[in-house]
Image 1 (cartoon, one colour):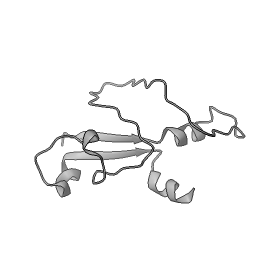
Image 2 (cartoon, helix red, strand yellow):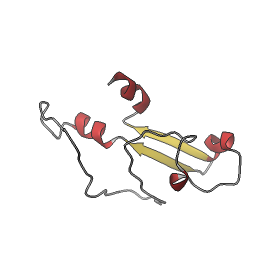
Image 3 (cartoon, one colour):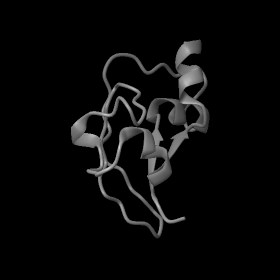
Image 4 (cartoon, rainbow, N blue to C red):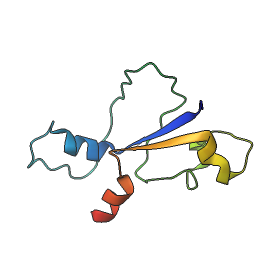
Length: 94
């Protein structure tokens, strides 16, 4: 089945687990993303940033795809991928 995939990246967690920074490096206060580079054969419809973790039900209208079906059928039309894998679990552990 062809469908759009919504990919959620927790940039802070990805940087922490990537090993790019020393283990004792602390990211405190505010930070910003200067750019995002996508290297894939894909169609990107939009990139949004937020400090909040959303799911397809709580997604603000500005971030949603416009669709003409009931919200409970959303998973049939779109895939949802979170990276690192289990963001909700890691959010409750902190």
